[in-house]
Image (cartoon, rainbow, N blue to C red; front, side, top):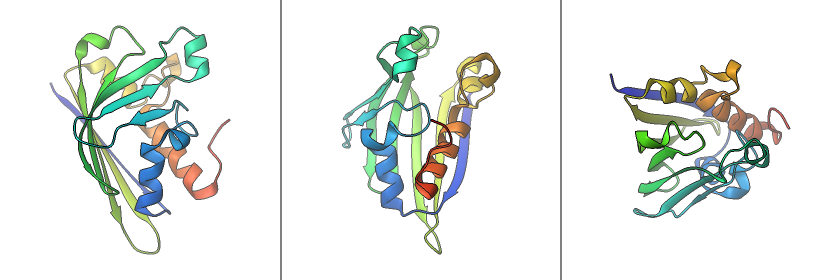
Length: 160
């Protein structure tokens, strides 16, 4: 059974500010798992998601996730491939497809929809959904998007 996860969050920020927070290492290192993401924002460009210092100290590789940019329509749509490298059990699963869509609404509120087409791997789907948080795998997309919203709206991430 193929899995697709869709998450939607409303953030009181402009599409450009959210876009910058998603696509620049200066921002991506401040929320979620706090690993700097490096993107060559052009079709065929590289995506490299770095592990944070704590992950590396716990044995994770420096490069935590990788992929390729498929489509860029700044600041409203980004499509990329995405492959988990932190856990060697997930590497053979190959690349998944990740889409960010931003829509400007009223009163300075933008909707951000994240669609992650995962495929058939149930373990990866559970991890990305945050269902393995109690065993140390983190809160997945719900955690990342909640932290992004907190940071952009208040200037402060949920935790240090």
